[in-house]
Image (tube, rainbow, N blue to C red; front, side, top):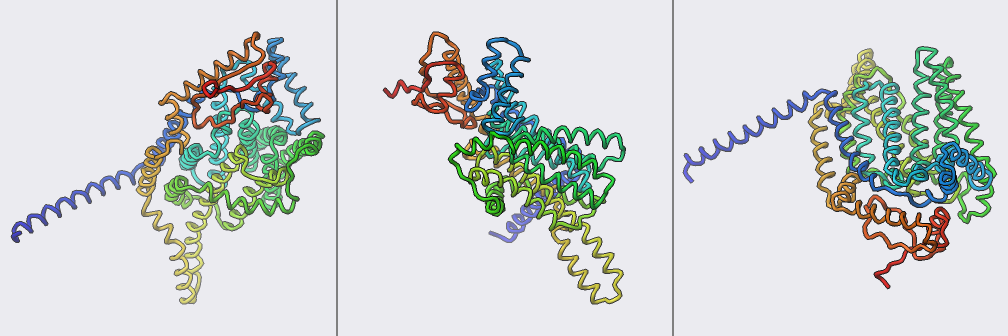
Length: 544
């Protein structure tokens, strides 16, 4: 190749690379100019789009498992009388029987008896609407409140962070069926945790309220909700007791004028929790339950161990990418904050202890962890803690450099000044990187997140993608048609010994256990009693 040709080729290369650099610079500049309000709108749209397939799949939801046992008496009352009032009274009567003979969760048992499908079998689609609606809204309200009030992040930025956190949570939810579609399981845990999040938001807001009337109203709301939370599952109840106690201590130390506003909900919640734990049914159930839990001290110690295990389990690559895209945003937001971030170690330790405490009840009661319907709420608390602790540490580093500069400039000893300046430089390095990366880093990791979400090899890895797959390939429709055919047979008074075919298709998110060929199986017996049949079993006609 001649020198002229080489020069020509080099010239083309230089122009091409220059063009690419110019394009990249323009794209970077445009990304950096995206305002937080627009980013928040985009994040909200992404969250809504991700939830739509889950709600559409709910159109094919049905009753299952404990829905039958807890709903039988109410269903019988509704069929016999058609009266909603009578049905509610039956639910409360059953609730009191359970309190004396089986379990003390007086609010959960009451609500579980009022399964919507007891009144109209076809309204199971309401369950995901209720559960996603309550949990997403309560989590958003609590998380945004913490970010705004306690960490000084503006409301728009807090909304962006919470939209992205909710997006990632619903994609990697530990047990989607038990947290979204199964009425009994999601009511006992997801719904109760939602009410606790609302309680904590109201309680914390009363601490920040400047108006006495507003403070009293928020205190009243929190006091009523605390009693309801105390009558739910013990995991949420114990968590509520610990956090409310910490807030009482905080008020006693930092602002005694507010101690009554937080003490009243703590007292009412504690009374409700004691009524729950001291139920005669708990003792009777323990006497027949074969599961043996660990002693109290061992349960607490093991809780810290399992907290680490599940933190590792729930910190997937997908979660890490979303966390990384949030870092530049959180850095900019906390840097503008007027709050002090003086105790990052204590905040981290407190969050870890609250999270660990959620593993204690099941370790103490049955000697195990990993109950998926319980893990759903612990997983969300972990993600809330992850965001809050990350933002707090970023705030510590962002404001520490300012404090270091002020301290160093007051030093007369130049050597001391140099040492402190060096420490400042080491501490602000990561923040400087986040400052420069800005929206470009957020956009880059968002692109990776979306690529991983849409292009995953296993279409059942992420809930929304799995729901779309089940809707598109027709298995959701097939499952629902077969479920309705079963219901038609169950409600046929001329058939007393029921034989149904196994499901030929079932959405991956509907991973509940079906009945068996054994008519004495507990699931079969639940359906048998609910519809007043002599027997119910699954028969594989093709296998005969």
